[in-house]
Length: 477
Ligand code: SF4
Ligand code: SF4
Image (tube, rainbow, N blue to C red; front, side, top):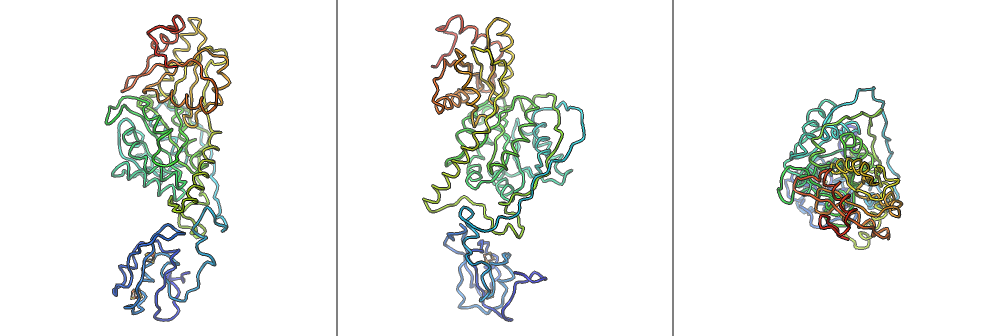
């Protein structure tokens, strides 16, 4: 490929150039190197690589060889007559159908952590610490309240652990940097908030299509539009149903405490690399700022390197990360493959059940509203009402397998949320897909930075028991 000085093999002192199209990435360095203007930008996408190789007209070529030296690809621009490195080069660039040997996987390692006293820290900091302990050494982001504290801590800590913090020019730049970093098999993350998350959705679609991992921590704030910096849950629809164009899904984790901010962020990296798919940690403005006790884990992760990474190793040279699949049947097959992956993700359903065993009314809530709901359960029990809290910890996949066995025993579900019914919609969709009869469903909703209060939840549950048809309740089924 190259001699010890890094020069490409030459047939003679002066050779005519030749391009192995399968190895040309269209960078154009050879174009700039040629004083005779023999090399031009290409116009055709190569069917195997999805890239656009250069085109040549060698009528004026004086065989100076400068284009060989300019080409960074070992098998891009070479001397005419150089043997092809591959019997079937196209196979090197079609990961879905290739039969080439799989590059070696370097497994993750778990390193023991010294015992440490619990921290008392805010949710955003806990998530940043979780990312570092999960082996994340690359942060890309654009500041946005109320998520900025997480980014700020990463900016302080990453340089101390040989990591990289890069404040991008925008959220669009951020997500595309994460695409590149994840494609190289490295762990990257961002902190953002609702308007910023919206801007990242196009890039998240590309990451899902290309099977690139990355962790997005969305500290939701009030919307729509610029809204305000109060806590809301108005991104549930986006995270669960709206990750850009195409048939996209990602696991969505919903923490309720600073401890879960740390734990779920660590889990997010593991899930993201396991499934080669982005993972969303969906918090809210209160949770980002809320201070709580956080116990550190016993181990931290030293990341390995997955075999699919495009990272410059010789054994990885055949890898290609892209989401362009021009043939309709091939793209349908890729979508079907992704559907199977989404199906496999169903086993990641998680829920926390609090006093649900004997409950005849379930309060369903997540994030900060689940904390008010939990208080309401205790108060209702004191009034003799058997209430329980069902707290989804994954919003996608929705934990229907934990909810379904409870349904025959309950009269009602009261959904408590800080959005206009987005959590309730996820629950209703899950019930519908499971083909089960929905019980009576009530709700307590706020938006715009106003959170449901414990007193409201108690009043809704207790009031509805006294008067099922009372005007105080908002019954929608
Ligand atoms: S060998 Fe020299 S003249 Fe010929 S295409 Fe390359 S750079 Fe141009
Ligand atoms: S320098 Fe090499 S990789 Fe870049 S366009 Fe020219 S031939 Fe292709």
